[in-house]
Image (cartoon, rainbow, N blue to C red; front, side, top):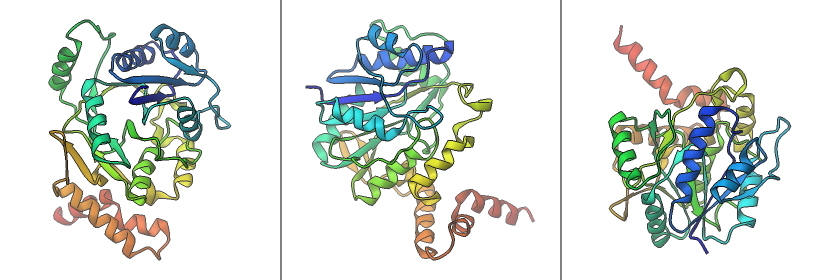
Length: 302
């Protein structure tokens, strides 16, 4: 029995660059110790890649009216087809290394109910990764040279014990909102939200959005509005890594240090609670940090 089951719903393997980075990612997963991989969906080329890389493939994932896989179905299929204690939904462009498994193992030893996440390192890549001996060291050095640690917004994987997240709404994969809700849900249930950025290098292979209508980012997609509705409104999709309750560093769980960004976020949550009686649109106008910055800049520019 594996400790972790990774599950993902890759895009079609029709675009050459998307196909390359997805192969890179899935191949890296297969090299991890004590991990099994489940690929979900019937996108073009997926069955062939799953067979080639020797991972489990389940085609019959439920979809919305536009044919996009539903998160709820992905979670259900992964839970039903895994014997692992830990489940992890991960985007199919993420390269994982052995430090990921060690962070998962350490978290599992320290907590019963939690979600593990981290900031990602964005990485420009134009050719397949050579997974020969020493590839991890080479990749780490190259990623650090590009020095693109993503801001603490947007999460590309969520690892959690099987007992957690058993009531997932019908979120649409590849659209905004559902990942923020995952953090909101954990905070609401009083689970530990563990940021392992200090212990793990998660590598996101950069790509464009040509697979989406109009080649626009998923934030602008109509399905994002549906995700926000299912999440319970804007307030529940504002959660980010800044809302983590713990950090994993040197194999230990510690409380996050109070930075200016974390203080701003805590103040935002305080204001949301204080103005709960106002319409949601009005609350957003009061508490959104981006608007605070604009007001401060405008004030000091006079």
